[in-house]
Amino acid sequence: MKTDIHPEYRLVVFQDQSAGTSFLTRSTIATSETVEWSDGKEYPLARVEISSASHPFFTGTMKIVDTAGRVERFERRYGTRRSKSEDAAKQAGAKQARRGTAERKATDR
Image (cartoon, rainbow, N blue to C red; front, side):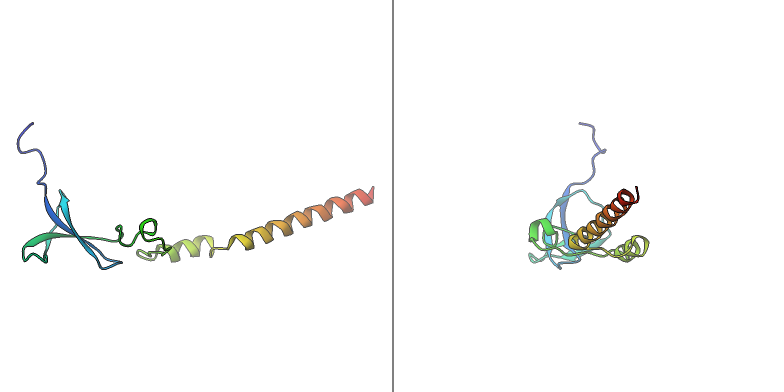
């Protein structure tokens, strides 16, 4: 292997901003912050928004993490979310309206 081309592989603390938990693991991430860990040593700190402590796949709970107003911006552009039952009712109403139009055309003949 070539020397001096690989990033430094070291112990780093990853702090989950939404869950408030921290993990000590190895990484090559570049950070400017440091934190004192429970063993008394100081390690580089990397702040993350989602980790296994807060992700719905690992926790089993659904939680919307709003980063910089993305959810509100989406809802302003495309409207608020509808439930599946509202969508089904809307589609059933549209089918009924089409059926009524077809029946009126048939009687007009």
